[in-house]
Image (cartoon, rainbow, N blue to C red; front, side, top):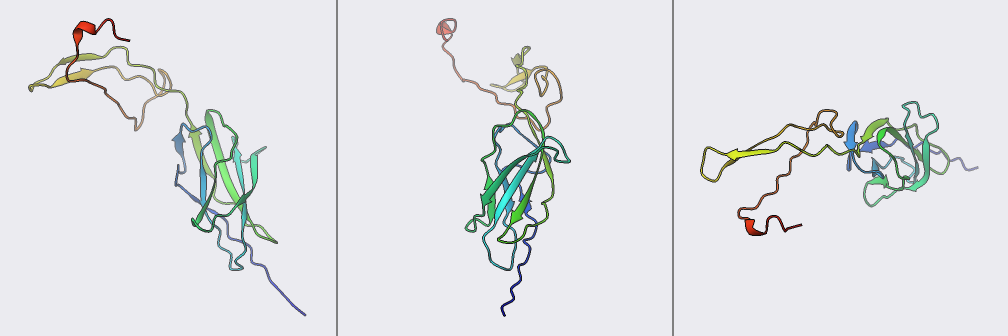
Length: 171
């Protein structure tokens, strides 16, 4: 008589390699990552990833059979269909040969593809020190002209010298 026992894999722990809980991304096919589940039986695992616009996962998008990558120590999926701008929730479940884990923690994220509106009132004046200029403008919104830009970045392009003779003919 042979008796064997199968341990349930532990629930996957989500990993913020590409983005974390509550973050915003502009990626329409975001990478989801999680640490490999522990299971003393040493079996290879597969995972199901669920993505939903509802926190209670009514009608989620489910990606099944994601193979565990033992060499990295974490597994991932970038095979989601293209998502659209909006709020999302995701969770992961692990499967071994005979059983399944509980769901992971639920993480939420926001996909934001609407850029800020262009600055239309930029003013440059001579600064206090030689070679210094001061720039002033009215901040636009996060989404067009709406919303506050939080943790945004400003990129300023400049040239030290410009050939003003060709200013109007340049493209």
